[in-house]
Amino acid sequence: MEQTYVMVKPDGVQRGLVGEIISRIEKRGLKLVALRMNVISEATAKEHYSEHAAKPFFPGLVGFITSGPSVSMVVAGKDAIRVMRAINGATNPVDAAPGTIRGDFALDVGRNVIHASDSPEAAAREIAIHFKDSEIGNYSRIDEVCLY
Ligand code: RTP
Ligand code: MG
Image (cartoon, rainbow, N blue to C red):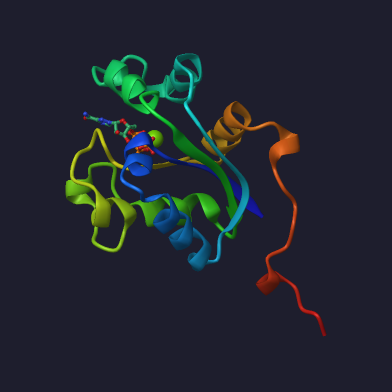
């Protein structure tokens, strides 16, 4: 089963969208295997977004992502990385299709509610940044197992 790292960003938490977002992920058939709310440290934020370190929006991005509690998750399932990116929609919410999280709940590229890893390499790297192995659960969804 593929795993990906997902974060409800501080704006999503402040707008009360955590339940709605988790619900969409679970209803799609993906499985939550780790979950935490915390304020991400500046060092962790810089590491998480290190690919953007040279970009003009980097200081604002780090400031925003550390500005309040966010919800971190590891989400598992078939093609979880690609499916989560599709659930989230385009980076700039103005371009995000209705029915996606960004397309339904956001307008501003700097407050786009949710993050998900964009490749298998990024997923492995980001999961390791935000979670210890011992924090990642191992269970079957009821719809994954046949009783008889
Ligand atoms: P994320 O990493 O947050 O899931 O977003 P993403 O993959 O869709 O987009 P990415 O290119 O990785 O950008 C990371 C975050 O930086 C902010 N951003 N601002 N002002 C700008 O032009 C700009 N471009 C990107 C966004 O908040 C984006 O989510
Ligand atoms: Mg990204």
